[in-house]
Structures are given as C-alpha cells and as structure tokens.
Amino acid sequence: MKKGTLFSILFIFCLNIFSQQSKDTSVNDIAYGVFKDLEFSKLKYIQKLIDSIGIAAPIADEQIVKHSAFVSSYNATHRQPNYVVHVIPKDILYGTNTRSNDFRKDPLIKQNMSDSVDYWNSGYDRGHMAASADFKWNKKALSESYFYSNIIPQNRGLNHNSWNKLEMQVREWAIDNSELIVITGPILSNNLSKIQQGSFKVSIPDYVYKIVLDYFLPTYKAIAFLYPNKDVPYELEKHVVSIDSIEKLTGIDFFPKLEDSLENRLEAENDLLLFDSTYFKHQKASQFVAKDFGKGKINSTQAKDFIGKEKCVCGKVVSTKFSENGKTNPTYINLDKKYPEQVFTLMIFGQDRENFSYIPEEFLQGKTICVKGKIGEFRGTPQIIADKEKQVEIVKE
Image 1 (cartoon, rainbow, N blue to C red):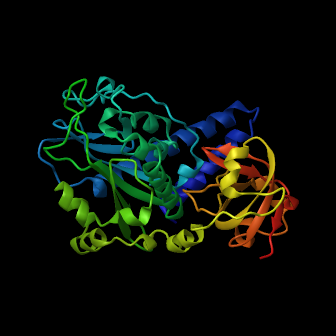
Image 2 (image 1 turned 45 degrees about the vertical axis):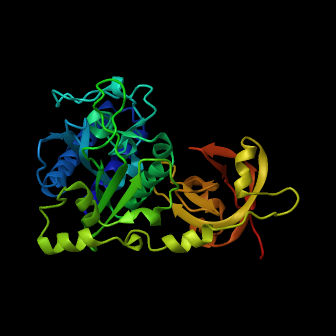
Image 3 (image 1 turned 90 degrees about the vertical axis):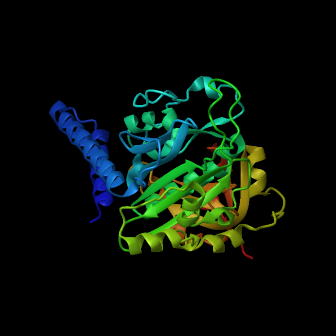
C-alpha cells in the first residue's frame, strides 16, 4: 500500500471519530492525539521527500529556507524565489482549511526580503508559487504559504484565470496519482523591470513555470508548463514543455538526486497524455456551438445569467467525477466544457446517489442531458444540485 493511501485512510478514520461527537471525552482526546500524530508524520514524510528528491542543485547566492511543507530557494537580488518545491498529497481531497491571506515576511530570511509595501497598489497580484490551496490539509502549512519567499509579482489576469486553472488541474492529478512533487518559479534574468515602489528592487518576471513529477509506481512521469506573465488563455496543451527546456531558461539543474538515466528520461518528457489520457478527446468534445434546446430550456453558457432561478439547463456531458472525500462525497457532471474550464456543473451528493437507478458518472458520460432545478454558483461556476433522478432528462439525439 502506498504511504499516501495509508495517510488518506487514517485521515478519514480520524474525521469519522470526530464527527460522532461522542460524550466520552477520553475517546475524543485519543482521536485528537491520533489526528495530531498523523499530521506530524505526514509533514515529516513530505519534508523527507522534498529533501531527498525535490531540491535542485545549488544556485549561486541562493538562500534555501525550509518550512513545514515547502522549500524555497530565495533570490535576494530579485527579492523573490528562484523556485519553490512542495508536495501535493492525495488527501488534499479531505482538507478543510481556507485562505488565511496573512501575507508577511519570511522570518528565516533576515535581509533583502520583499514585503507588502512593494506590492500594495502595484498593479500586480502577490502570486503564490506553491498554491495556498495545495496546503488546505494543514493549517500551519497553509499559513506559511503566505510568506513572501513564496510570492512573485504576477499579472492579475493570469493569476485569477489560466494559472488558477493550472493549479486546480495539478491538484486533480495529485488525487488521481496519490501524490505529486511540484516545483514552481519565475524565469529570472538581469534585465527584468522592477516594481516602481517600496524597495524598487522586486523584479517582474516575464514568464512563470510549473514542473510536475509523479515519482511513484507503477509509472514514473513528469511534465512542465510555461506561461507568459500576462493574461493569456488557459490552452494547457499550448504551454506544455519539458523540464529540460525549463533548465535551459533558468540555468537550474532540477532533480539532481535522481538516478541519471531516470532523470534524463523524465526531464525530456512533455506528453500531456501521460497525466490525462483523455485530454484531447475532452477538448474536442468541449469545442461546441451553444444550442437552442427549445422553449423553457437554456444551454450551459446561459446558466450564469440565471443564478438563483429555477431553470432547465441542457448540454452534453463531457467530463464526470465521483469524489469520495469522506464528507459529502459529491459527483460532478460537467456540461460542454471539462474541468477546470467547466461552464456548468450538475452536482449530486453522496447521500442522494441511492435515488438514481444508475451510476451517474458512468451512465451520463457522453450523453446530452437537461437538468431541472435552482441554479446556484460554486467558485464562479453555475451549478444545479440534483437529489433525485427525475431532475435529469436524457435528450434523444
């Protein structure tokens, strides 16, 4: 059994104990102790994994700072990280901690540290390299992600749109692959513009990269992505590159502790299908022309205009996922565009799956359907929650 899977099972076990709200204080105390021991063990495991695999070869004048669940190679000249390495565990699925927004100086860096004065009203977002949502499984680790040693000046449009979608996609891959090692950073050079306030020394990178490594059996695989630091379309397939190409741009030798033949193979890979075998199939399915489904019905792209209203939303199911998270166990049915570019989602909670005569994520895949109900919104995406089969109509084509 993979260590990530074992952590997940124990994590769910502890959550179930807490949820019973036992009157026996000693039982709760024991459960709390087990929970804290589990979190401590997981952090130690992640730290060991980063130390043994994730840290790049030494870089001139870098300062390596190690925190609970990430390591930053800090560049005092540019006042931002050369790169940040962290691990996304599978049980991020069960994390409940939310954004802390407590941006602050890294206490382990004593000089040439960027701070809020550099960024305030600068026109640039304080862009996380290791995404804060990647640490929602641990409160302390999430808070530490707001250290400026994990922050770069990032174009606001990129940060909120395409880069956010990339982060969401990598988290999905982590769940699918048990856990992933992720390295993220800016492309730094001597001729970069500076933020014109504060210290006047925070460089504005032209490009940002993300490296993803699955270092677990049965298949070792890797991929990298390079985005310009501007508001560009997500178009994931157009931003796939190899780790070798990132090394040429940065001058950084990544994964030097891997066996040479394995390192050479992984760093040459740039095949998106290794992580998502159906990516191009779903992309083709998502290239749709919004239809008119007739009186009383709207298509998926129109749903955003009817938040809070009872409607019948129609479209083709292009991606599905049953997420056994130990809590609500939701099923996601995306119409016309796949995650993370979904335009409308049908949501079925675990407790309601028994009200369906079929397995929703299997039976509905590829079918055109109409969903009746009140349109809500979750993280900007319109959705309808269905608790009974009669809310879903199969459209004959």
